[in-house]
Image (cartoon, rainbow, N blue to C red; front, side, top):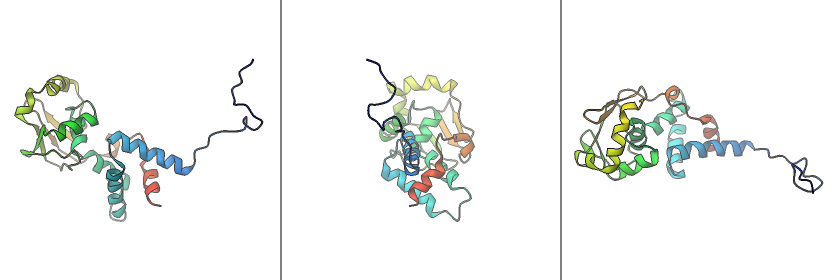
Length: 180
């Protein structure tokens, strides 16, 4: 019995999978949404906020990236205080961090420029942070973030840019998906 590289039947040799435009848009949306660990409701909120500013903003793509990058859980991940965005989200939920000396436990909190993010002194003794803190020495930060390794404080010194973030998706297709 010989194995053929196609399924049985007369017309099966012609069958190929073609992805529709809708399918491409959906796939791009899902990639970006899952990479930031957002629910559909949260992600749609960010996209619709940017779409409402369509005439007033120079670049919608960059505006969406800024909104996603300025989330507290993402900044904790970018500073190297967590190994993944999911872990960063959990650490924020468990009140490990202070923003401008105020405890914040909301992962979606939008951190503003010049805000200081620090680790609570009581949480420095936790096992999870003891494992992560030695890794900070070799962590390379984006240009828009600064981290003081002695004080364990991070700071946003500039706005995140699309060039630095380089998302692996085509964001303009996401706007097309939600513009219907």
